[in-house]
Length: 297
Image (tube, rainbow, N blue to C red; front, top):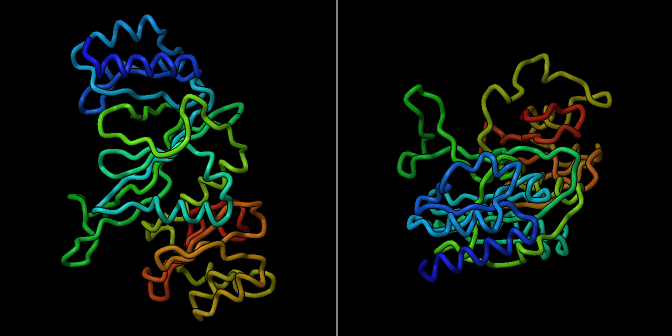
């Protein structure tokens, strides 16, 4: 067994002691052997030692979810040379700096980021894409389309949770930046919801079917007048209406405004993107933003 595989095995044994299910990976990050059963039962140290003898062992990955004590990661992809991680980080820091300091943070070879933590729950959520943007041709500035003519999306942030595998250091070219996976922080459900709500607020690939545009819905009354978002669509003067109805502007990132509804404890409920639509789009991603419907603009 070469030195690198010894290093990977040594860390895998420490993960077992920390109550984290793990396995080894190939050069392409695929698991060596099936890992479905590892979502229920972690490999033992003896089983890991036998796997480590294989010549195609190149890295290590952890299994998220219940089997690892509620371990979860936010995966920030790097697309077209950029990632929204710095903006997300600053938004979290502006609201909950002490929470940001607790989180495990790694950088991937592509320049993306993994942010990890544990949380306690009776049942754990499965993986989910939290934020996407349209894939735009850098020359024509037009949204690229698939063969079936649907608009092409780029994933910005994914939640790696139950049923997900995440590659970690000391896999080659992965950099550990903050925290200790061997002593992962357990955060509250409220803090976890806050982190995810900030991530969702970066979603800008809004389907046309989600945009409120018909006359009936535009005229729906809210406290005796048009809903703030509908009022904005007609007049463009919307910030004061939102604030008078209990909304709070939480932060601004890359020209986009991120807002919290009064029903939300500490999460982000919606974003306003001035680059979309005739007057911009106000997109609601929270179910606690009545009378707005979730995932509508």
